[in-house]
Every structure is written in structure tokens, then in C-alpha cells.
Image: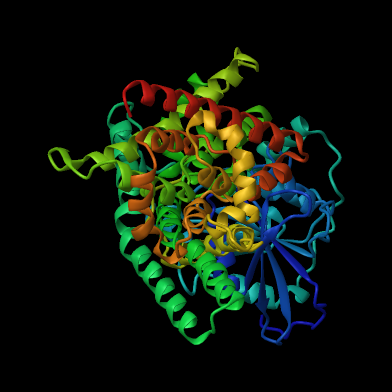
Length: 625
């Protein structure tokens, strides 16, 4: 019966999407909200909140909130706690939802219905969206939605989140919410065990009544998992996948990175040609343009790596990779769940640390946060490329394998080895005798949705540019200022930079860094490098009185001539363990709720970096370098 809905919606009417992980909840969110989304953090925690708006036929809008996935209302990780707090009206800065859309997987009603019953017991108005109905149909699973609605006492709609028109039934329901009678159930006060047993019994009864209690089809996923989860073949497949991912990050990104560098250089030359000589020209060209170009040049690598991570996640393969690595992770006191945060850290430690919130065990989550900075993030690549290009000869070792590529691989492996070593040491002081069983859902394999990939990729790009870009740009400008003022005094015989703030600070710092082979130019460049590693390249160009737009071309021959091989190797060793950027330390603070862990992370990374550089420098000198 089609009735005109009563227009009761205030501007702040909130509809929350809740469901198990991998039920297609976010796909429905993207379908409903499209580009009308914003991503932020929940107040007080580093857990992303995705909010969008849905415009009703009467022109009014609903706020749609995509809550983190959860299996129950008894949280075991920070993101699950956020979901439970929002539903209970306890989340800071967010009101209790006016309506809840419970999204359930049509191919696994048993698990989804337990969450529906839990939300219903809280007395919240609910609409049940049975998603992936197309997949269920292909498997011969027929769901009588009317019968299910009668059993639950709730409105039930069919959805297909990966199709453009897959949310029509849900949209019709949203436009008619005013005609629906909200649930008036009183919140349940039973404990977790009693509630779980009661819900399980009720779910069994519902499935029996709608004749789905024996629906267990034979899936193609089961056949694929015989290979992908095999101890030998699965590990080989994983190794090939990771190899191809990192090869793509290096090879695919080179052309767009070269283009960005060229555009930055041309822009600097054009702006420089129209501005008069003086401090304004230096600030705009050497500070703003070069600084912004130094941020954007790494964007292709970030996009490519996140593309593959999202692709693997959307296809259902990423949880299987975590399962395969569980034994290896367990040997150093972690679980397979640490794999995904550590993999994300190869792009940037910030999203990797944020991804650790999905780890239920608090100790594993903390250790993962502490070792994530040791993964070789993309910010190290410019430094590695500069030093390898200047000091490692470009020659083929065997079968087309380049020596420079081998050195780069060794540096990446050194970061992984260091992270696992630190985790093993922490294991000796923690609950190393406690065996943790990895329990996680393995979703069915399916083709990734292009729309979801595009939206997820765009959101990650925004987050990276907003959180990291501003810091790098600011530090580049600060470095320009330190290297430009004060001017050299009359009659000075040295270069101008030697009399600047940067020159003075560099000589002070050189007392600390001289034992590991660093000169005063490197010492001063480390200051902004500690806050944002890739700024070291432009900082070195500045202290050597060169244009930062010519980093890759002019800086290499200068350092190759003025530095020893021992100094170059020492600096490479430093950056394997380099103390973290300020944004990473700030993320650790937000994630752990205090300054204790950020200070521990910065302290142990500095100590490891100094020790590794000292040993490398002394060994290199002993070999005549």
C-alpha cells in the first residue's frame, strides 16, 4: 500500500547502519550516500566514522552513519565498542540513532540474525536489510522475506549492495519510515551468556520456521581455499601476490612521479620568472611550491598500494593472508590479525596504526602499534632512492636482477626483520606462554566492486593528504626559513647557510652525530626528517644551497663526491629505524590515550637507529669504505 509519508524528519534524524563484517554494509552505505560522505574520527578514539546524507522524495535529508562491523553487542575491540556505544547513546558527540538498519548476509542468516535480535533487545527501531540476495539465489537459497518479517516482528527488505538499483526496496522503506511503527521492546537486562544462548535458540527456531535451517550449499570458495589456504601452495601464492604488489608500487609509480616532479619544476620556474628577486620569490618558489611538490610526488605510490590493499580486501583474500601468517606471527608473540595493519604501514604508518584497532587482544594491539613504524613506509623511498642512486653502481648481478634493486629489497627486509625482532623481545616480557587462537571470518571470494574501490581509494587519499601533507609542507617552509636567516655578516668568507640558524644548529647537533659518520649538513637535515622523513631530501638540497626542485638530478653527484661510502651506508641504516614523524606519534597518542607509548616508541626507535648506524659506520670503515 503506497501512502504519502508523514513529514516528521528533523534535520538531525539519524539512521545507523549496523552489521557483521563482510555483510555488504559499507556497499549499501556507498549506494545510499554516493559522494555525499565525510570521514572523520569518533570523539576521543582513532576509529573512523563514515557519515553521509540521503535525500528523501520530499526533499528532506537523513543522516546515514556507517558503524564499524561487529558480531555482537559485547565489544572485544575498540571499533566494536564504538558501535555498541553509538547504539546505546553513550558515544561522545553523537546522539542515539532514530532508526537502525541491520544489514545481514543472505548467505549466512544464522550469524546476522543474532545481531538483529541483540539490537532489537535494546528497544531501537529497526529495519532489516537482507543483503547479497543475488548470491543467495545463485546458490539455491530462497528466503521468504514475508515469513522472516513475521518471525522477527520487524520490516524486512531485500538488497544487493553491488548493483546500482540494489537498494530500491530499502530506499522505499526509508521514504516511508514515518508510516512504520517503531519497536517498543524494553532493553534487555540479561547477561552476555544468557542473552547469547537465548538468541541462538531463537535464531534456530526462526531458521526452522522459514525452512532454512539445513541450507548449507557447496561453494566454489571451498575449492579455491584448498589451494589458497594450503600450507605450501597458499604460502607461495601469498608470496607471489606480495611480490607483484610491491613491484607495481615501484614500477607503476615511476612515470606519474616523474611527471609530478617535472610539473613542480616547471611551475617553480614559471612563478620564479614572474616574481622579482628577493625574499618573496624565495619563499614562494623554494618554500611553498617545492614543499607542496614534495608531498604530492609520493601520491602515486600511496594510491597504488592502497588500490591493491582495497582490491585484496574487497575480493575476500586479505583475511586468508592473515590466517596463513598466523603461525609466523605467533612465533614472535602476535596473531595473524597483525598482518593487515603491518601491510598498511608499507604505505604509511598512520593507517597501519589505525588498522590495529581491529585486533581484539589489547597486548597484541599495542605491540602491533609499536612495531608498525618499522615497516618501510613510502616516505623512506625518496631517501633510499637518493642514496642508492648516488653510491650503489647500476649493474646487473644475474638474470636481469639489478644490484640497486637487491639493496632496496634488503632495506625492506631489514625493516620487517627488525619489527619481528622487537615483537619477539616484547614477547619475552609479556604473556609469551599464553596461546591465542585466531578466530576470524573468511568471506566468500567475489569480484571487487569498482564503485566501492573508487570511493575507498579517494577517502584514503584525502586522509593521507590532510594528515601528512600539511605537516610536510609546514616543515619544508620552516627549513627554508632556518636556512635563509640570518644573512651572512659583512666580510664573511663561508657560504651564507653556514651563518644561518640551520648552520648553527647543524654544528651543535654534529657533536652527537659525528660518531656515526654524519656531517653537519646531514645533522641539520635530520631535524625536519625526524618529523617527516622525506623532507630530508629537500632539506639536504637547501643546506647545499641548491634548488629543491633539482633534488634528484643535482644532489646525487654532490653527495657522491663529498660523502664517504661509510657515511651513506650509515644513513641508510639510520632510516631503517628512523624515529617517527610527528603525525605518527600523534596517532599513537590518540590510539593509546596518552604520551607514554609515543615516548617509548620514539625512544626505542632513536636508540635502535643510532646503534645500527654506529655499527654500520664502524664496520664500513674497517672494510676501507
